[in-house]
Image (cartoon, rainbow, N blue to C red):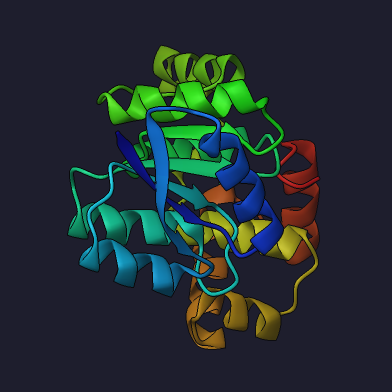
Length: 210
């Protein structure tokens, strides 16, 4: 029996996932969390085979949670979930130690296959993400500039492009405005840009925002 923990801040999503998995004979949901903090705490107290982890949580970024969970429970397979086809986030999640990446809009059968696959020790990605990964292997020269950003710098870029204020970013990232300003300065330097307007144009051009 594959034991699964679901981490998602939406009760209706958790219920939907549980309903899908209740129809299988070999998968059982044995834990739930609605915040990143809860996920870390529960994962430290209980054993699971697979964690379904939403990449967008109210208290901390999913990739940060992933890194902490992997540190605490290196043998726990973490399958990242997202509402969007964020290939860049998918690649960053896999590089951070995720066992797989799945869009929430995927068919129920895909979810079951993904859980079984990562529980067996394999990786799971969609064909589209697999192609993106293959492209990153070809040549560093072909990589976009944002590929060299750290996770925090990339998160700052996405928030700026989404129109969030410094105070809003501070709340969502659990960082001081001063620290976020440092990340902004670094990403401006790495992207060879000078202001927020150019950052927004860059993000739109590279399809980093919806």
